[in-house]
Length: 314
Length: 314
Image (cartoon, rainbow over all chains, first blue to last red; front, side, top):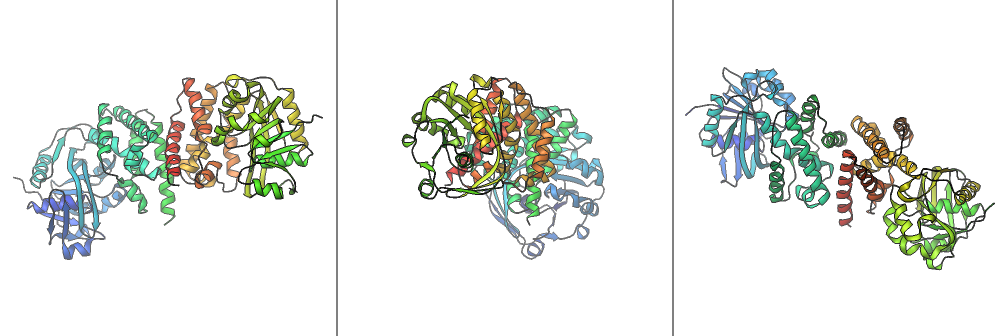
């Protein structure tokens, strides 16, 4: 088995969980933290998980990437709104053969990071996970954990699965986290957007939970129509997603408990919203292909208004 | 000069103001009131107006149309959400040659009222007025007062100006209220919708005043795009509105003080919203003509969700 070391950039609900699982499996992990640094440095991490609770009393915690060792895999689990920090955070961690795995929402981060570390190092990924940070160094993992990763090359062209991806898959699986490898990263990103665009947007615009949106005839139809636009957008970027995927997402959402989306949580906390990654970048990619998505364009405008005002208020 | 008697159905900010102006000009007016009945019965009406304040210590006040005399002109100034009451309210007031003048927002009330009193009696009108009811029998008229009226015939076909309309115009003008007569009621209704659809909808959905909507680049563009859809919708119903009308409406709105739309005021008070008159009926008329207005359709769905939840909460 390979023996990669991992740096976790953004050790919150997502990065903290996956990093802890890897460390628990005996892999060397280094965590970059901000607000939790002091606490985690002294007390480690507590993971409550539906797959089994565990604690890591001692972890490698840092508040500066310049103090961290260079690693084989840099796992970026920041919100995309923090990506402006990466040109400074990443270079100190990079050595020969280091790869950067972007576990983030939306589209369009990979080409930006390719400019910083070189395209050959960039892998993208989407996560299907429900977890929250409920206190300093304290994460509650509620459901799912599947990761899907694909190599990034220019313009998100499909490309072969690399040996490094296979090594990562082995290590992640050894930590009890399911992982899929794909030759088509763009399609995975678009599939995730089928859910993320309607629910994240409407939860903020309509100040609502997913169950409220699904329980009203008008917004239930609206969600379906927005999903159809996402499929149309994906198609214009050569990502074919079957129509049946819409029903699958609706059924999945019907089964969720009353749920606040990540964008709604950010909004309620006055944090910047991931509007560009989740809506702006996909829209621009589709517009470049000559396709117009009127409903998603309007969601973008409404969210930009609300986000600007939300942060003005603080 | 003719000598019509007027019944005012809905003596609030709009009907109370116009009715008071008519009575002040010596015309016989009968007011139907609900919550204000007792007070107005005893104290009359107070009008604060930029055209001159006045009081009417004694008015003909009623709380039931069955107690009112039959009148020549029934001026309906209810919110369209109250129109379900009209089949009961109107018949006691109707005599030979009575006309019903619907001074209401949106589209689609006239054919409903035609079923109740006969199409030959129905006249529609739009008002350009800023006024508020600020207390029992107390109305503050801030700006404008122009009324535009047109005869209704099946499917809002253009039709000739009638003698009765000319009589009404004479009487309204004698009361110091400007009035225009039109052969094309439908076009007047669509022109009003160019303003009403974007601002009423977005003020509720985005919890905002008109100046906030106009002050943000994204929503300013969105307003323009929605107005373009309204023009497209009007065109599909044979109502031509020139593109320059959009700029006129934007300029007009820029000049308004920070302003809450009537739909936003209704929303904040937990009242039902005029969604069907202002958005639903125009959308259905346009869809029947085979045209799709995706942004306005989405506004409709968002508003229906918010309205349903708003009234659930009470």
